[in-house]
Amino acid sequence: MSEFSREYLELLAEKYPDEAAVCSEIINLRAILALPMGTEHFISDLHGEYAAVRHILNNCSGVISEKVMRLFEDEIGEERCRSLCTLIYYPHEKLNAMRESGEYTHDRLKSVLTMLRTLAETLSSKYTRSYVRKQMPHKWSFVLDELLHMQRDEYSNQVRYHDTILESIISTGAADDVITALSDIIKRLAVDKLHIVGDIFDRGPEPARLLDALMEHPNIDIQWGNHDILWLGAASGSPACIFTVLRISLDYGNANLLERRYGITLQPLYDFTRKYYGEATKENVSVALNTLGFKLEGRVILRHPGYGMNSRLMLKRCDFENNTVILDDGVYPLNTDKWPTIDRKDPYSLNDDEFDLVNEYINLFRDSQSLRRHMDFIYRVGSTYLCCNGNLLYHGCIPMTEDGEFARVRHGGVWYSGKSLMDYSDMVVKNAWAKHDESALDMMWYLWCGNDSPFSGRVFHTFERGVVDDQSTWEEPKNPYFSFWEDEQVAGMILTEFGLNPENGHIINGHTPVKAKKGESPVKAGGKLFIIDGGFCEAYQKTTGIAGYTLVFNSHGLKIKAHKPFEGVAAAIDDNADIESEAVQVERFERRRYISDCDAGVGLRRRIQALESLLSAYRSGEIQEKE
Image 1 (tube, rainbow, N blue to C red):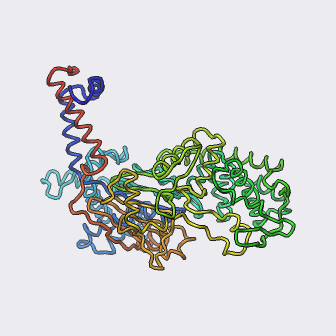
Image 2: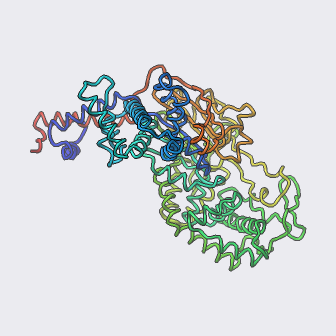
Image 3: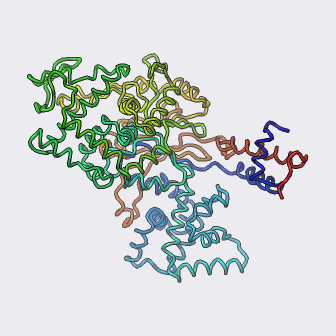
């Protein structure tokens, strides 16, 4: 019959019961193959910076502004174009501001509706009508569908028809709702796929609000970063991950995130601190968390000598009587003498109160429904890496040796390297989330900070940073990967390892802030590798000199955007202030790319082949059409 079995074709016939249904779907799929590939938007290292990231997501890294200027600048000027962009980014806030300023008039609303309709129609040209309809809110689908099919050269009857729709939207008081719906559609059509290349959590105060926004995106994937792994480990019940989350959250003043958003009270920690340290001051809470963290990490290392991290058993190097620690290059004083829970003979043992505190926080993290909702989403749309349309996405690194080869890492008696190490790491995360067994939970902590973890890529000096003041001890050696990422041959080797073309493929990497103000470029390996961590997090901006990189990949090529700090929503509403960005076209395709050139095209062609086999079977009588 064909390469497809009869059983398969009979199952396919359940969905396409006759020749007409098969022909209709073949026509549809072939037409989709001829559409331009959709725009992909890459962003990494969000680190809880909700306001700045929300704006970047709203303006699609400048994609919307570019379209607005191209369509309307000659007609209405730059300032009104900027105002229209602000309305698209923040429709509720901008409409309220228009009321207060007296701009909320019939003529202005009609003009705005007309321009939004034109912009939405322009963006919809890359998609099927069916897909565009799915992006419309149900209650406004009729109005929006009719508006998007207005034509510039309509017959008089159609002109009257569509003009009446616009007039009625305003006269019935529905303008705000329709403008908001059109703005949402524009943002959804401007970017087909959103790629988050890791690190949603820590440092910035609002990762929960970020996740609420990301969960509304229709087509999103996440490549887990080390901070995402840490929170996944904590939510799964890893004690070492939990107390690291507590320490980082309090170090960055994010107690509200834990207590108000996730319902994880800090009272047990404060009570424990008062009992052993006298007062629950910020300093004492920090010492208590550091001590518990060192113990819990040490217990993981002792359970798993194969991690190769015994050199990080720092409590065994301490002389608590003289309050010093022996490091590899000498003896250093500790910055605290408060060690009330340390058993000098067994420094990694937990006393009864510590056991109780650890178990209480395991239950608090596991029982938080709001945290589980967010972690379920990160787990469901996330992965260690992603191969998509010739691009390889991962957050951290591919561990390597000093010789430029893939590092061989042993876990559970099996050696892994390159892609197999990434696949193994992916399996570990899924096991930890599903099973919560101790070994998988320990591995989550290892993936957060292990010497050869693809998420980490460096040797953590948490102990030195916590209790040694000499900052020369804080430097954390990086994996050799980071000394090879300018090497085109190494980038090609990595792409080949993951089954991608080393000639035209790209690696898109986050994790390491690019020091732009010192002249460092985010473009590595002759344009084969891009680092898009440029400092959304305010804590990094003094180092990077910018406020984040993003990458835009469309049917014409790749463009990297360097963003300046966000001035705030108020400035956007009052002054139409956008995030100022510098765009660099890092690659322009010789010819435009279509869906037929993309990963989706491979699947669509395979579906067409199956349908053509079914059509042939219908016409030969080997399979009967359904009545």
